[in-house]
Length: 140
Image (spheres, rainbow, N blue to C red):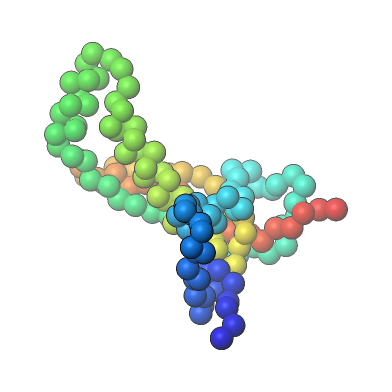
């Protein structure tokens, strides 16, 4: 049975060799060789194929107790570390989802990437990463 490229239908992942002690999670493996930029072009590369808009989305609820703690902390000043970590984790999650969608379409890069957030009611926050999936190649 022939193995299909990663992200293509029929792909079967092989187990890592026994001597390997650590392998980064799959989402980190594909992100290392994946360009994601906020610009509409990438210097030194040409866009060969445009696959269209891709996005990653999550909706998070707020913990009432952490909200009260954040409210108290904000009165005295300082960073709200729990809230910062939650936001960083959420942004990383939506980036991974967006990149996976681009890979599923055949892209190897995303141009014009943006983040968008909105409040849904008093307790939910939507976080979205979006951009245009493209296939690029080096110029020259």
